[in-house]
Length: 139
Image (cartoon, rainbow, N blue to C red; front, side, top):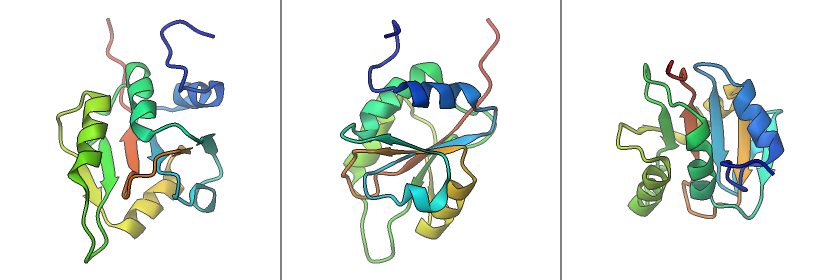
């Protein structure tokens, strides 16, 4: 056990976050997301809500300052989003910036190119989010 690291962050996830470079993306998906279909590097976080994972990741992970660093799936035409999901994720990240919304199949294409997919236990509809890694500021 390491001090200062959320117990929601598994050793595999910690290793993955450390391996990622500037501009790499990681998908934190809901429990229904077909992660293994779209990416060969999948980490399971069954039973852990996406907001819990985001709150555990953000102290370890600098968001990209040169591009929109948070991306979520847009609702399918005729469907609607629950604004509480975005609010919950913003709170977990401590993030007030722009969140890009992308169409479902465009989100899948980004998941294919992502460094990894973390399949959470999140059950909220449209509970998928992509984080783009930035550069850690020099002290």
